[in-house]
Image (cartoon, rainbow, N blue to C red; front, side, top):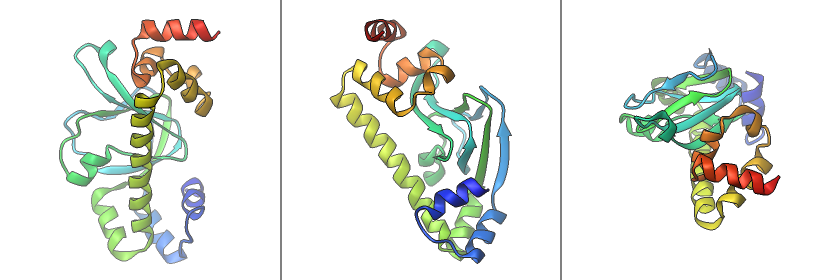
Length: 190
């Protein structure tokens, strides 16, 4: 719980009463590596804070090799199929752990109660929305403005641990190239 408190307090002061009410609504869940914890067409009912681990956001295809990875979330970040969470509509993508992952989550219903009874609820909602917007915006700008090689280099400059944690097929999908093209990029760089 200390991680999420430090994260939130780095942005705003939280009263003891709000913090206690908020944390009474949090649940911790440890999820094994490679587990899909939100499936296609399920309605997202949680916003989660990653205590440790890595989560992949992807659109599944019939052939697993053609899955489209469009996001990763890491330690000390919020993760959710936020569009499904907000609209209460089925998710068009899945969430999967890439490593053993510990999540602190709050349900939709509990967050509505936190919104009504505390100031911290609005902060969490805003932070989650802002983070997801910035990730989406950054990804779109990278796809439009950077070459595949530049996207690859930028990804590993920002997240050097990825190369050890993720299969190349996820990385190639994320930067928008085939696995073969990624292999050529990696050969050129080294």
